[in-house]
Structures are given as structure tokens and as C-alpha cells.
Length: 199
Ligand SMILES: [Zn+2]
Image (cartoon, rainbow, N blue to C red; front, side, top):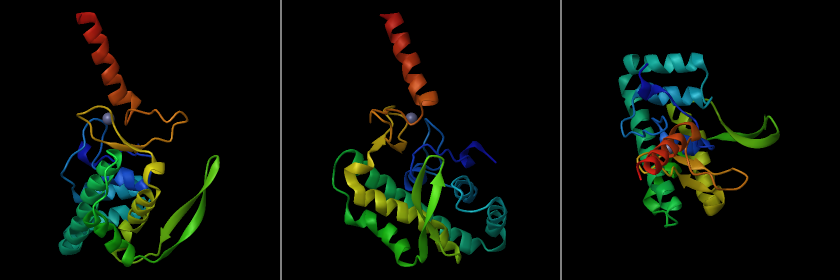
């Protein structure tokens, strides 16, 4: 597995993490591999490790099916990047960016389920098991919720201009600036320290 295939979940919401893949702090990328998509689905607990392993094998046993899902995932991810980017800049979301989300919502059946998360409960969409399209159902649902929430979703983009990762600012003070304090935050601190030393 290459570094491209490591899914880093720092967005705080499923659809935000999906918009960021393949993601590692400081380096968002355009290319998405089948392995990268499956790694994300596993990391986000949409599929189990066993199901992930059988999905990985699908690119050999049924390459057309794998390619169809990968194309649909890419279309969804790129639409989310555009829509979230517009939301961060407080611009309107174009109707065409909602279409890849609606396309998946249309074929999705499932139910909401209460999930306990350490200190609080949240509602989580459980897609009914089925064909490959269902793998993206929870992501589409999460994206739709974020778009409906609008400004309340507190969608932000990392303050490192070279980074580009999205996150939801659920910090208490609502002043989170970095995708990851450990990577982009520190890089900024080191750079401004160096600037101060130089001047
Ligand atoms: Zn960053």
C-alpha cells in the first residue's frame, strides 16, 4: 500500500473526509485509485476489513464494475470539492454540483440508526446491503446534510494555502485554522519563527 492509499480522517464529517481523499495533511491530490477508495471505505468503517479485501480483489475479477464505482466516486468527490469550496467562500452552490449527490440518494434505501460516540449520540445512516452503488450512500447522505446546514456546518479549508483540505470547525471557540495542528499548524509555526529570526 502506498502513501496515497492511507485515508486520514480529520474533516469531522464523513462527506468532508470523502472530499479530501486521497488525503494526508498538507497534500491533497487529484488521482484516486481503487485501493485508495477501498482504504477510505475501511477507515470510515463503511466496510469491514473482510469486505474491503473482497472489494480489492474485484478490480481483477470484475474490472468494469470496479471502474464504474470508481468513476462515480470521483464524480461525487469532485462535485463535493466544488460545493464545499463555494460554501467556504460563502458563495452559492451550483445545481450541477448537487446532481452527483442526488444521483446516489435516488438509488439509496436504508435507515437511520442511533450510534453512541463516547459522550453523545448521533444519527447515522445505514445503507441496506446491496450492489456497489450502496457503498457511497452514506457519503451522499452526509454531503446532503452539510449542504442543507449551510453556514451551520462550519465548513472551513486549511489555512495553509498549499494544503486544501476541508474540515468542519467543531472546536469550542470556532477558531480552528488547520486541518491538522501536528502538520500544517506546526509547519506555520516553524515558518513564522524562522521569519522572526531572519528579520
Ligand atoms: Zn492543512
